[in-house]
Every structure is written in C-alpha cells, then in structure tokens.
Amino acid sequence: MDVSFGKKEKLKSKKLFTQLFEEGKGVSVYPLKLIYISTEKKEAPIQTGVTVSKRNFKSAVKRNRIKRLLRESYRLNKGLVFNNTDANFAFLFLYLSKDMPSFELLDQKMKLVLNKFKLQINEKNTQ
Image 1 (cartoon, helix red, strand yellow):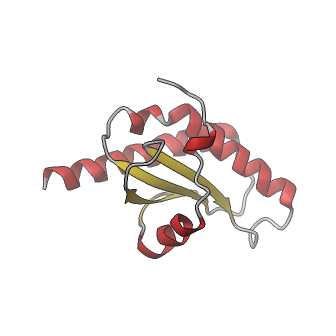
Image 2 (cartoon, helix red, strand yellow; image 1 turned 180 degrees about the vertical axis):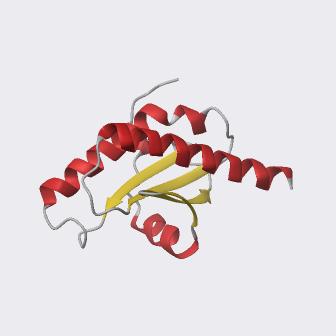
C-alpha cells in the first residue's frame, strides 16, 4: 500500500466541494467529521480535502497546523479504506473542536472515523 498523498488524491474541484456540502453524507467522531459522496471514475479512487473553521481558529498559522496534522493522519490511515472498497469517493474532513489537537488524538480519531465510514458503506452494500 502506497502511503503517499499525491496530487491526484487531493480534492480541488470547487464543484465537488459544493456538492459535498449539499448532498454529502456524514460520519462523526468528535472532533472530526467526514463528509463523503460517491463519484464517477477519477484518477484516484478517493479524493480528499480538509477544512478547519476560521470562526474557531482566527490565526492562519493554527488552522494550517491542524490541516497538516489532518492530512498526515489521513495519509497514514488511508489503507483502512483503500483496501476495502472498489467504489470512488470524495472525502472532506472537518475539524470541529475549538482546542488545538495533538497528533496522537487526531490519529486515533481518524482511525475511528474511517472504520465507521467502512461499516456504513458495508451496510449499504449488503442491503
């Protein structure tokens, strides 16, 4: 399993971003929320974006730090989803808390949210 987070895996499409907020389904494990939608075939099976609220973190330095931690945590744990699905998805991770997180906390919560997503997808496929 490739543990990189390359250019093709990054969510950059403005159209997909708005579609995620309008039609996306969510999975939450505080302080993370994963919003996802199924997409048609792209270069990468899963495209991912991260956001941190400007309302909760006024300083761009703090927001960027949290986004870096979120991307790193996803990069290390994306194998949980990549190896278990054949469909294509667009992911958006939201950081909901007002406190500065540690990497250990984000890593632990990322695993939980990805496993919860996996269970939700498997339930849909079996119905």
